[in-house]
Length: 488
Image 1 (cartoon, rainbow, N blue to C red):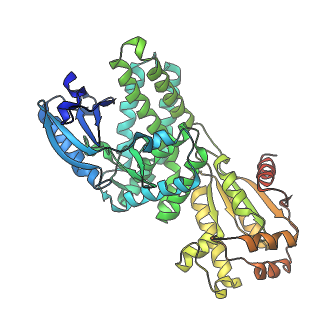
Image 2: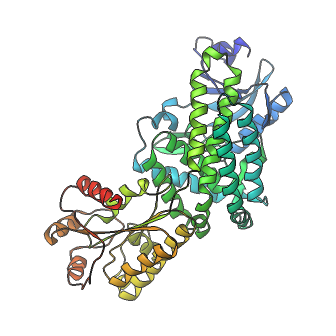
């Protein structure tokens, strides 16, 4: 790298300091209110920036692609010291999600991340590329890279990864190709991890999409989302990852995405594996005394990749009880810890009812939407969505009143049908407390009020064989008891 790039005068700011960020394939120079990016003259198995012409072409493509995601950030292409330069609006590096994730991702931001991903995929271009072939090609590259670096990736563990990945890919091959024919293989962002998302004006925005390879960026939309999920999990943000997945599935409303959960362990493992490979490339660029951190990261990613392929049984957890017992709060808290990462799919009858009626979650429904016939249709929809996820081998938590014995029997039968471990929780609290909670409820998907509760109190609930729980204490106590209840 030319040392002149580290001088403010080079960029038109003679008295300004220059902050330098280096990645495995680029240098970024931060000066005053601008960010200037140049590509390294490198040639790797998956990219070639070895000539000025190639670097100029790829930066022009980067400008074009990323303007679709962040038009206020990407400005123009220029030349400095014989190098093509991408000129961008500078933003505070503390706004990057990789900086924020250290302090934790709250539920609101997790929901916004899901919306960001869903909106990006809604406008992305479908591609007629077999999904199985994409993942098979990545498999070959990864296995070769792992075998070439036994100091980072122990041979026995690399073989375990190879065998497990190959077995899962064989099972998922028809699914992956079917998803391609349904338009779910698209020209995606391709690099949707925490380091490529900035929170600007309170909302997350994608930047730095894959620009150097249409092949690498043309992938299944769940594989694209998988990078964000994997990265959140790596940062121990399992609740956030669970919310992102659940909200994304809700916004997309695609049964194919529920059945596609069969491939999620494959996608997560590949994302972690590719990250291990990229980090290993950086290790080789650095002198040994300066590469200890990167070596540790490469090994951590590799171990994560292997862990995503661990066998995991599907579970069905059902949380029932009258209105005001806290079913949704408890279900949302339990979901991240149920089943394989990032946790169970949370299906809430109140939300399904609003979707079926075509109104916003917090909109109010007329009384005819709560007739026995209407409620029966809602329960059928809940079971349909649960069955799609269970058939994919993914765990589910259902959140509904389940007042009728036949409703409880139906979900128990669903678990048996799919060989899923079943837990049923029945929440209870004194009626006066339930009325108080309902009176205090604001901006919730449930329309239940005191009048609804009075009707429920008159129900013949029949014999309840589920684990009965007194939830009249604090929400935290209720969640703890519920967690213990499903693990007992």
